Structure formats: structure tokens, C-alpha cells
Image 1 (cartoon, one colour):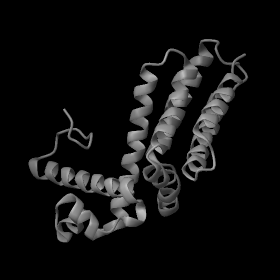
Image 2 (cartoon, rainbow, N blue to C red):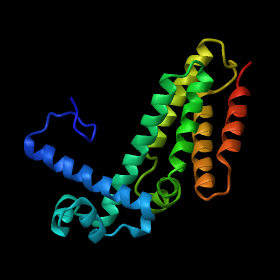
Image 3 (cartoon, rainbow, N blue to C red):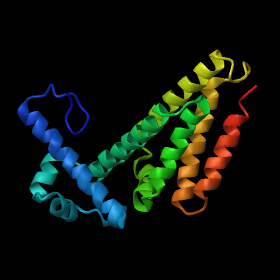
Length: 203
């Protein structure tokens, strides 16, 4: 059994309540971001949105706004991977399972403010603190696994470096997310181009 945060419920009641409050505050931040953008997130707005006092906000996030935004950023990354995994679970081929990560990125950018926060504003805010986000790390591991298994099954050329190729594909996802968030790329064209890259890996 897990809490709303996805963490195992092995904590005591006080710890669970603290985690739930932190989850609620990061969720309030994302609600504000989706409605108005990251610049609209302030401690007062967060407190009002979550129905808490400023003191409660700081009691759970001593770093204030920046710490809450960083937690919200990680949460979007986890949501992105969850969406991709759900899509991949119903896919029939390795290409479709990898494409699930591209489709999940496009789905994220349909919420313009949230997509911009995850792909543009968030990395700019936290670049010096996070080498690779949770979403990118999970996507990298999953795509590498798919490529390796496809290669073992003879569906990908033996000369393909599955690990390095996975890094390049995740880089494509990140760059496309940025361009789509900036309205500089059409999602349909991105999906078509990404599919062509995958098709090029077949022997």
C-alpha cells in the first residue's frame, strides 16, 4: 500500500501527514502553474490555494517557493513517466513502446503552462541543482531496456549502441519538449520525425 505521494506507507502517522501536506502544496503549485504560469506562484497564492497558512507552508518547505517548485518539477517528471509507461504497456512493438515516451511528452505540452514549466522554466531554475531530472532518468532507463531487448531479438541492427542511442533519443525528447513548449514545433511533426528515427534503427 502506498500514500498519495506514491511512497510506501511504512511511516508513522505524523510522517504520513507531513508527506501528504507536502504533496498537497506541490499540487497547489501545479494548479497555479497550469492556470497562470510559474510566475504566478507565490507563497501567499500557495497558502490560499492549499487552504493553509504561510507558517504551515514554510514549516513543510523551509526553502519556500523555490523548494516547492523543485518538488513540483519532480512531480511532473514522475507523472510524465507514469503516462509513458501506461501507454507503453498497451503497445505491441518496441517502436511503439519507445514512441510512448514521445506521446507522453506531447500530452504534457497540451497543458501549455505545465509543459513550459517542465521543459523550459524548471530546468532554468534548477539546472545547477539537478544533473538529470527524474523523468529523464526513468525515460533513459526504459528506452535503453527496450533497445537492448529489441537488439537481442534481432529487431535492431547489431551495430547499434543501445546505451548511447537511448541517450540521444532522450535528448531528442527533451529538445522537442522545449521547442513545442515555445510554440516553435508542431507536435505532429515531432512524432513523425521521432518515428522515422526509430525506423532507421531496424536492420
